[in-house]
Length: 308
Image 1 (tube, rainbow, N blue to C red):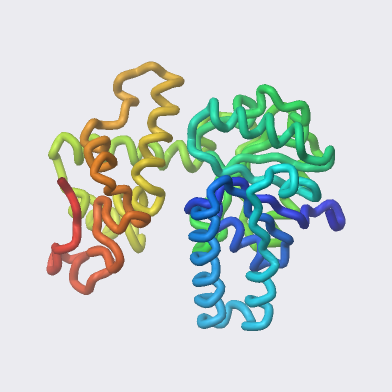
Image 2: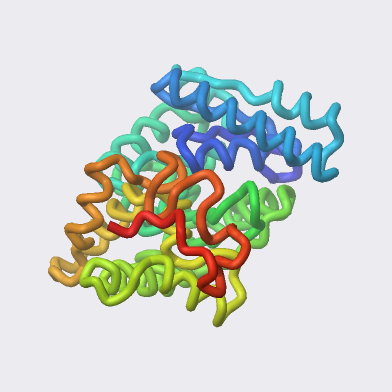
């Protein structure tokens, strides 16, 4: 660490969020190691990261020389012990399954140096639950990044064991890479902003599944009313519909309320491989989804949605 700010960042999991987080930290001069058991997934992530660096250079956000050095500085590892040996901060990004995250955290805790801070990029699970078998409880907390390549917002949530030293280090790290931390001071499932988003998402899925409204019409209404560049269904496509389902299932597991079960219609889309942006089809078709087309917002263009 430099001035108590984490410099050596290990990203565990190279999927959608993991690849974006690796890019973000490297773009702000951190030393990044991207760990994944799947070499194919890691290679795919590095291809995406290179595209983002090229886009930042084209937009004048980064100098070409710096971007190339930053990209080349990202290491990829499939050996957990090797990836963790110098880690100041580990950000875990494995699927939203409590038992899996608990297992991964316990393995990280056993292998990482004493100094290493440990967090999850989970949007619904609490760090105290994930870290039930972790010894370094004072160094654990939650982060919830949105779209790290596009925006600066990150939700931060402490648990009852998070030390003041850890809090200062985490906020220093986030501000050093131009994130805007929004703090939930004590644990609650789903953070604060994300709990509100979850309520919106849950009701949107119900309205669609019960055939009250199409994803296109709802998103158009949302965008017209609040001036956003896309609506809730498009955002679910960006998150990944498989991830959306996993998150909803964590709420159901906690409540046991059948109303918290995601609709079977969502299962049907997932079974077809319609997961959103990453599979080029979800509620919309990609690239060039309908909501980006001229005239679509005012109902003059209606092609490109996948609503069945």
